[in-house]
Image 1: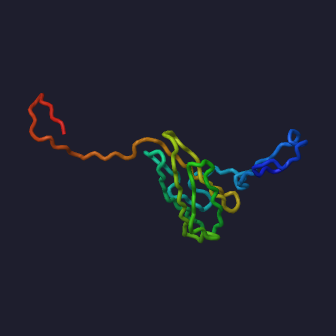
Image 2: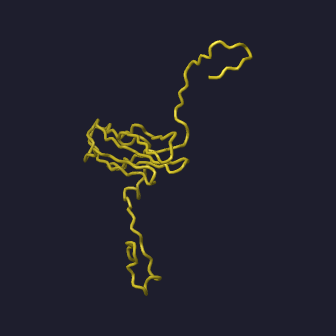
Image 3: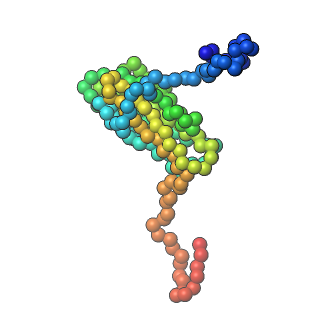
Length: 165
């Protein structure tokens, strides 16, 4: 087998006999590991535990910042495994070697929808031992919180009469 770099590197006589491999960025932290603890595991706590992007416009980028806090009595080293879909991205600008007890790392998750539909993915946090953490990401095309006034004054209106405002 040979590695594909955009053009064929095989001799013409071997092109149909050997498969070419495409280069992929494999993240080995997602293989052979279980990420089943949502929001909290082994002294690490995500705030918020689940991230929701509600009511979005297509083509516009949205960002939410969440924190990974170390609630144990010892320092924790961790790796941030970003989302796998192209619609979500995770970035940690101030990543240190380890998180001291009581401190936290801030991670910015950005979301850019390409069409009007439901999106889901997750950010995975790999820590020492089997303390893997999962933060689900959800984006849905519905209205966010709608605010109506508690009282609307239409003035004087006779019974049976219609008034609009």
